[in-house]
Image 1 (cartoon, rainbow, N blue to C red):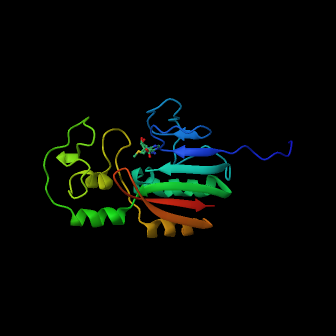
Image 2: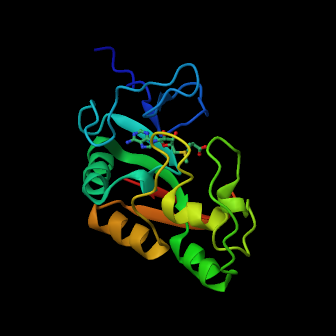
Image 3: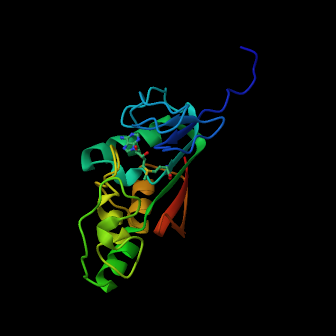
Length: 187
Ligand SMILES: C[S@@+](CC[C@H](N)C(=O)[O-])C[C@H]1O[C@@H](n2cnc3c(N)ncnc32)[C@H](O)[C@@H]1O
C-alpha cells in the first residue's frame, strides 16, 4: 500500500459506437472496436463503492421493469461517495405532449435497414408515426434497440431520493430528434 488514491474507474454503459478513452465502454452489442459486451448492468462485477463515474446516454429506457430496479440499485452500490451518475433519457412527458398534438397520419410500413424511415414520416415531429413513435418503442433497428421503460423529471428525482443520492440536477436538451432529460446524480 503506497497511500496513493485508487485509480478512477469510469463506466460508459450502453455506449453504442461512442468509445471514450479512459472509460470501460460497455454495450450489449459491439458496434465499435473496444466495446466490452460481457458486463451486465444488472449485476456489475465491481465491489461496493469502486466506481468513480457512470455515463449512460439513452440506455435506461431500454431496461425492463424488472431490470430497471436491479440497475438502479447497482448504480447506488458501485458508485463511491461523491461518485457521479450522468444519464440521458427521452423526456417522456414531452414525448406524450408532442404525440397528442401531432397529426395521426400513418403513411407506410417501416422499411427494415432504411435510415430514419419510421413509417414514412421520418424525423417530422408533427407526425405521430415518425420519430415520435420511436421515443415510445425504440428505433427497433437491432438488438437492444427497444424501449421498455420511460422517465420523467419527477420519476428521476424520486428514484434518486429513494436510493439516497445526495444531489440531483436535471436539465432538458434536444438530442436524437427529440427532447431529452439529462440528469447528473451525486452519490
Ligand atoms: C439508443 S442507443 C444509445 C447509444 C449511445 N449511448 C448514444 O447515446 O449514442 C442504446 C444502446 O444501449 C445498448 N443496450 C441496450 N440494452 C442494453 C443492455 N442490457 N446492456 C448494455 N447495453 C444495452 C444498445 O445496444 C445500444 O447501443
